[in-house]
Length: 255
Image (cartoon, rainbow, N blue to C red; front, side):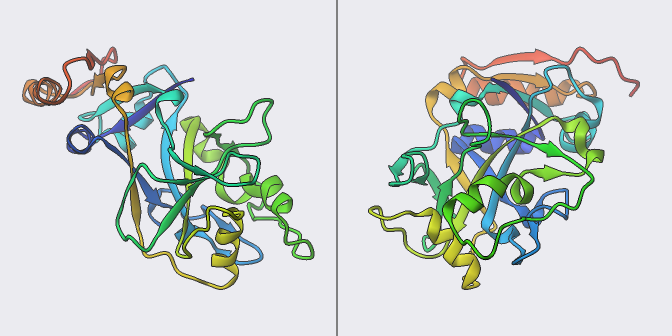
């Protein structure tokens, strides 16, 4: 699936230089109600997110909010180029302790989770939008893997309808401060972290991107970029990967 990410030129430079994609802790995303649950209160410190959109048409609100007020860039990629490498857990063979990360603290570990309630299992989430009470409706009498899986969207992937214009696609990592055992169900480690109130130290984690991501990347420059800003973007591409395609925004906005 084609996906798009609006960001600043400064953050683009970090992505190209470090070859990483930052996953921010849910405590620092724009919606303060992310990952607030009924049973355990805020679960934000355990949730790390990279946010994209599936909207292929340029969005003025997204340019203004995330694209440095139309002076930034829009990245165009594909979900298949966002890859999580690591040891599979015994559970269904899909949850992984992610190894292609640069961690803020070595004591933290990160497990990627997949959206399971679709016709096909995806390693990304299509965000739900609702004005109903957004809580993690887990049945506390059955603390099982299944009860968490079925309700995960309620806590980690639902936003109020006022955010629906984003048409968000997100990738989610769950943080864990207990050392994983590759022979056991590592999802349970996250559950144990939460129930035992074991803190996660990191405020972010950087996913290491592979060459396919950059070789198939398209950058669109912001509709209000001046010539010097366009030169900076072109210079970054020339320096780090000349296979990257650079386009100019088709939007006509008054400066």
